[in-house]
Image (cartoon, rainbow, N blue to C red):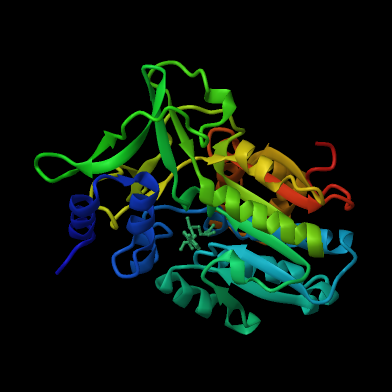
Length: 360
Ligand SMILES: C[S@@+](CC[C@H](N)C(=O)[O-])C[C@H]1O[C@@H](n2cnc3c(N)ncnc32)[C@H](O)[C@@H]1O
């Protein structure tokens, strides 16, 4: 059977070294051999666990966040509720359950899911059947109209490119073949000017590596334009930094551990930290404002996660109480997901700050 590694080798032999973005895209999204195309990678039995899979509290609070944003933009009916990269559909299911405390909001919602993976679409179909979602291969086919968008651990899966500074010139880090035909990093010839590397890195020291995710910026600009035009808001949650960061964050993840990113393409998740600085720039259109990024722990506390945990604990027995306590700690503690994960919002410029960002 032809494997993804053979496909990559053939492409590199024919065309020369490929960009890291091409390598990531084929490894994650190749229609037959891509990591996300083949399987459901989430949960304890998979390779990683995301916030909505840790506790229902996460999705419930985001459902209430969406409800308040809907009220802030004048309660349009219909409102397109969009999730980018919905995984198992858990976040959307928890959001919609929480949204039912406001029946007029619940009734106005049309659910749209942007998902490339056939394996995960099948899981989402089961989880969300009663809400009749519509699927999209990408954000460009979302319908016109007011929308609220959520994306948890979506942007870190988008393909990045890397550039390395050597002798005062930038080279692109590409994926090529070593003498033994294994994949390896190689450098492109020097580029006299590189418009992709931000000005803040122009005089970076020898050996600096900068990561750029054009796909993320392009998606955010399109969504911000739609928000500016029709009204709405977006909430982006991911691990990342505020911008201006140099260094390699590109990594493989398998069995809940780091994995060499060029080993066994298609069998491990590939991710890179999200550059929230770049996303803020991409989202700042004439008709939109951005908020944050703010630490996930602080954001969830502002939305009332402690109070929600206390309510859930009231009716719980000993082991369930422990589970709720440990989920609360995992989602909010600085040593767990509380600080590394960040939250950024986009809103139309005339609306008040969305919940959680009032004093930012
Ligand atoms: C890390 S999972 C996060 C799942 C979910 N948001 C959660 O928090 O549990 C990434 C999700 O994004 C989807 N995905 C990855 N790349 C994508 C792309 N380019 N377009 C659409 N969906 C993508 C994956 O199939 C998966 O559903």
